[in-house]
Length: 128
Image (cartoon, rainbow, N blue to C red):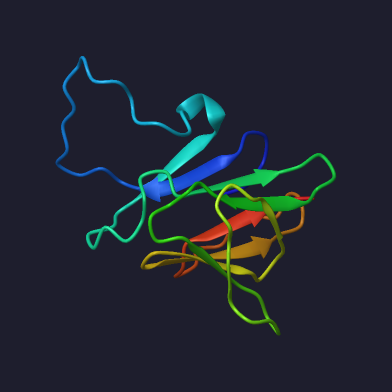
């Protein structure tokens, strides 16, 4: 999914959970804060609002763990795997892999105007 305009919030799809209409909404990002991507997560290894990905005006892309229960790992070529500190944005680059519970999200930078190609992994694409 292209990271343009509003941030993307990635989290676990709520399956089979019902809230009473009088209950307050869960804390954290709302649709107004960004586009929500809800992934199937049968093992419940992700939080409902796990990670925010934001593109800044200078073209850089940042990932921020939203205080998730199991955390987020960053795998970067040539470096040790590191855990993202909650609520601390970290700059991400093409070919980084973000690990959210049982899910791996690969960051891919494509030239502006390039058409997306079907890929076996879920990927984030950002344009300069």
